[in-house]
Length: 233
Image (cartoon, rainbow, N blue to C red; front, side, top):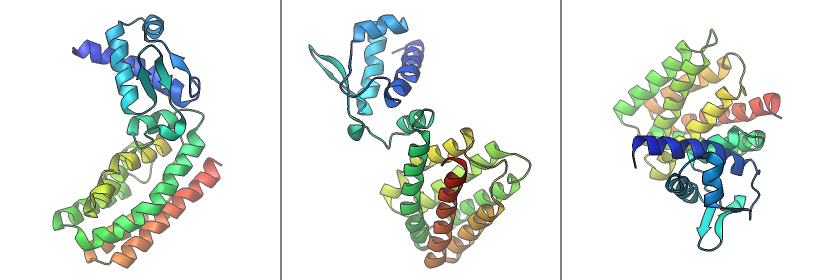
């Protein structure tokens, strides 16, 4: 498909995906490809491509003589970064943020403990660089710059754990961190204590102190949950 075709089906997805995840099309709703193509003023081939993407996310299923049926939420691929982004942009944001932050609190401390045992010298250096970048952007309303280093920090932790399952969750963690920033579920500047904790985690990983790395990371995730209690109850 041409670039323009990809652009068109992307535009359809950016309207249809959030509508489905927001419940505008309840589970069991049948969507007619021809009608949708007319609604979005695109060709049927563009519409079919958009439907294929939605099927890959398990948001819909397509059956001959039936049409495109919206699947129950329990069947969605809730780990798909795009599905997370759409849900964070809708009315489901508080619940989505909370469930993702609880997920982080369950896995990231363990990943940090493993990283202290398995991180390479290069990963230790990268982790320290990310933490210092967070410090450098922690004042003066530089949340976008802070976010870049924060996301990179947590990706390194997950990758350095040596567990491929944790590593694959890097995009999920990136989306929840971005969601907190872009949907104003943060203070104007990051909590100084949280910034310091990231620096200390980097030090603990470099020192090979698994217990300290896990404990400090748990403090970070507990703090993130407390932020939600204050800003997105």
